[in-house]
Image (cartoon, rainbow, N blue to C red; front, side, top):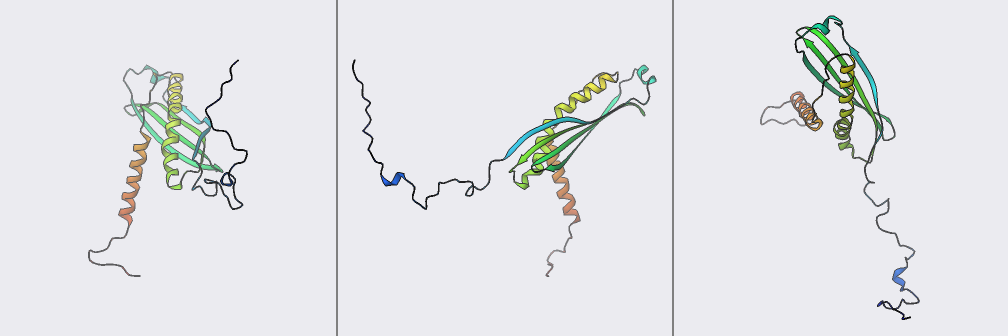
Amino acid sequence: PRRVTAPFPPVPATFPRAFFPTPNYRPKNTMSEQETPNPVFSIEKIYVKDLSVEVPNAPQIYLERETPAINIQLQTKAQGIGEGLFEVALTATVTSKIEEKTVFLVEVGQAGIFRVQHVPSENMDAVLSIACPNILYPYAREVVSDAVIRAGFAPVMLQPVNFEALYMSRLQQQQAEAAKDAPTEEPGEATIQ
């Protein structure tokens, strides 16, 4: 048999001193030198926190043949529940009316527990107001549709919602209110303290 040798240079018996750390050696990118650890976002639990179905005008309302008007309201609420844990609740209220008669009222509180860590504080409100409701909304849609069907009506399919646009609109509204409430000064005058 023939012996094949690799075209690598022979390994020296000893490595040069540069390969070994000196007493003052500190490896780069240690935790203490990094600016911040990587952000963490995870879903711990998704659940129905509240569910209410009302058909106040039953059984006569089932005899109505007119198409009801549907009104949908969404609300989000976030609260800290522990170290890096937040509960975010998305409440969807669906009201169906024929003229002034309520056909049905369904309110769903879809909630989730989210682990959010190492996110800059200036971005935390956006994460809790955009990312979390985007995750919860499909579940709330399903619960609303199922509840309406079980109440004896045709399913209500909630349309997709742009939570980022809602968040930006809320920010602009808050900024406009803050600007309106800020003290105004006459042009050319300054307040010196």
